[in-house]
Image (cartoon, rainbow, N blue to C red; front, side):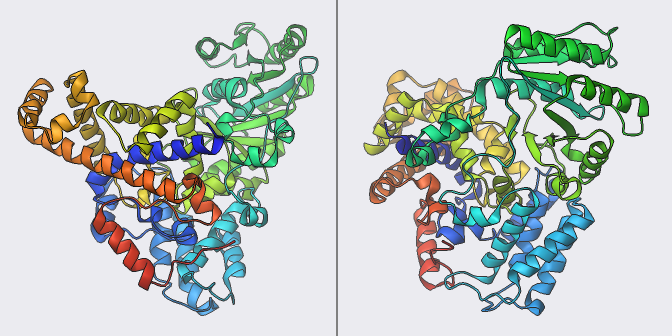
Length: 586
């Protein structure tokens, strides 16, 4: 199966599964998946007043929702400007600055970002086919990208933004000279858990970017990072936190769960001796990477800071990573700068990025400390650690989603055989209840439902937490009904939709799953929508001549249009008579 086809299947499988979950709740699929390149990638979402009220009533916001919503409200007021003047963008810049400060972004960083956006926007003619709000969002995106360590100049000319190496990678060692990584941070920031997550990532998922040179340019550009060659390091964890009760035991349990050896000398040993002995063991036994988990400390605790300096002097680490809690907001940036001046660090690991904080840490860390964010923790499970991609983070902050990460998550869970089988079913316009179950399980494997859904552009502004809970409850009901079906019914949905015995079959199924007959009818209606969508996807894939819809928004083509007939007609009318609809930048 061609690599691009695998990525196409991953996109379709992910979006089909998510659209099946959210179309009945929101009554529409994200409009950002219907427009043209620039319109879909840089257009602010436009939620209705009712959705705004519902969202504001929720007391649990995912990371960046508040900032993305505020920026969206600001850009809606720019109007059909032909030229960006200081007078026209002044109110927008003032409101964006307020939104940044409210999101706990450092004030100096916020001012620098606003000044950068002003410089990029002032006096610029609005590009033909692009609205003023879209061009303003583009300037915001570029400035955020540069602020977080990316390169807006290269990103604007890249054929596929969001792909390639992250902004900063980790030092590489050999069996003779292992790379030593020192983990430091405050108490409670999640250092020990981050050590286990990082060990698993280096062991199984770290991409060997040096191997990309041996690949052809076309092959490398079409291959998902989950399919790129892996470095597969041999990692040794060193338990040097001798102060916190059960810290060593916690690291040993994590090591056992991911099959990584943990070196320990007990809680009575000197942490400096533990680190030195761990490095010696690594050289003797062929480990190429040593992760040293140190004790939590405060910058004002001079004794513990001195201990950290002595460990650094003894083992001369290649990397000193500061593990910081993203929920501390801009304080995470100040902490990074303080640790750097005290002991010297090479980068930061942001934990708890799936929390309810407002995103100030991600924007502020590099601007305040000058040190890059190298990894982000996206959940509680051991695999929930990802490299930090500034372009993807900027996209999520602006409410534009993260399509690349969504496709990679789906591709990591879909084997080549499964992808080939799904492609065949799509080409034949077939879709049964077994496929429905597979897609539901795929979404659950990809992570938290809300987090995965918000990787789609525009979704974050259209759903709130009560709707998420409603979706999760409905999916459980649907799975219960499928489990009550016979194998014949699962493989032949028409028996429950158009067959003369459908009513009695649905009655039996709903009774067997403890649900009402109306729940069964609702599920059949949703399933029909799903089958129709799969058929449309197949036609669009054929119409694109094999183009990759997962990258359509990045490469200059239209995104796949999804949803019901009313939505498509409205989108076509808007595209025909509206201001937008151009091919976008590049």
